[in-house]
Length: 237
Ligand code: PGA
Image (cartoon, rainbow, N blue to C red):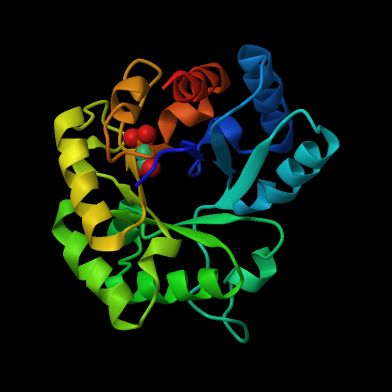
C-alpha cells in the first residue's frame, strides 16, 4: 500500500480538556500557532458530537486550517424510532470519517463484531469512511464479518489498537505494530493506522514502518502543542 499521504486522527473521546466551545477554540489557536506552516498529512479531528458544529464553523471560517472532521461513533440504524441515536445520514456532509468499534466501546457498551459491521454499512451508505479499530483477539472475526456482508474492505481504514497500549503510556513496539499492520493490510487491502499511547516522541517511529499509513491518537491529541508536533513528524516522515 503506497503511503502518499499520512492520515492522522485525533480521538478526543470525552476528555474534559476539549469538552466545551471555548476550549475547542483555544485548542485550535494553540495547535495552529505551534504548527505554523502547511499541513501535508491529512488530519481528522473527531470531537464529541455536541462540538462538531463548533468545529465545522471554525474550520469553515479559517481557510488556513486544512483539518477534516470525523466522529467517534454512529448508529447501526438508518433512521426511525431509536431514542438517543445519531445516524450516519445526520452526519452526511458534516463528518467524513467515523471511528467504529473502538475497544472502549466494545468493553463498555458490549459492542460486537455484528454491531460494528452494521455501523460500517451505515457509514459507507452515506459516503463516510469508517476507521475500524482492531485488536489481536478480533482481527480475523471482524474482517470476516465485514466480508460476509460483501463490504469492500479496501474502501475502509483500519486501526491496529492493542488494548494494553490504549491510554496506558505503554505503547506497542514498532516491530509489533508493523507486523500486525502488515497482517491487516494483507487481509483487507486497506490503509492501516497504529493507535495506542502515541506521543510526539514515538510518532515518527511508527510512521516509518512500511505498513503503517498513519496514527490514531487519543490522549496526546487533546494537547494542541503535542498534537501539532505529531502532525509535523508526519510531514517529515
Ligand atoms: P491513546 O488512545 O492515544 O490515549 O492511547 C488511543 C485510542 O484510544 O484511540
